[in-house]
View 1 (cartoon, rainbow, N blue to C red):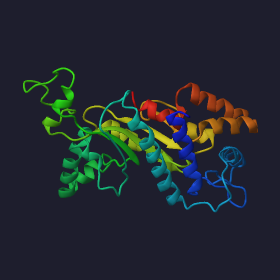
View 2: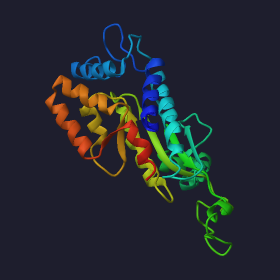
View 3: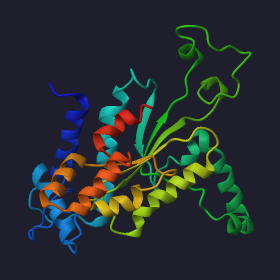
View 4: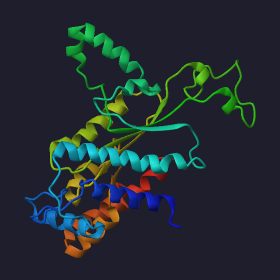
Length: 285
């Protein structure tokens, strides 16, 4: 029997293939490749061949993005809640985005943003001064419910009515759920929209009150140079996770693209690029 995360990774790739997100069109161009770049096509084809992508018409861009968010959410649902021995808690994993009824302001660290939103809606001059940079809508979020005193005191009496009146984790204090992780899903990075992940990250960092959630990006981009454009540097994004890093490494090596091999090594050794399978365990920290 294979390990839980190994099986989840296989299922993740199978769903990407069967739903037509990762395909090869009749011209031999994989759906995550930049057809104007021979290197991008070659690397993406190497990944697709390893994962056995079928010939299929390429999905429309917006549909691809929405599907990629969905399957990343499913992968996390299949893995992270099962790591209770490492990270106990009552966890929820949902797609967020701009259309979701759940907003970032629902969470303990960002509940004040709803107050700001109401103020700016009623005051045009304030809205013009502040803008809307504080309104954040990550693709996928993981959040934790607050805990009852019975749970907190399950093994020994830790809290009573004399202390801990402001602790976010304590449900008796009437607080909101706690945002644990923000996951930005980018199927490719062929436009400036990929940098939205950095903008979202900075918004989460600057506007929080309390603990900073994990801030990560998951991508299917095959080009190491484009991965590096977002991965290099520290301070905003924890790490980038590739949907098929092992296959990417082999594809780049098989092509013999020395510059790309060197860049991948820099990203991996510098802990700026990991495989999707690393994400659930990293989120337990």
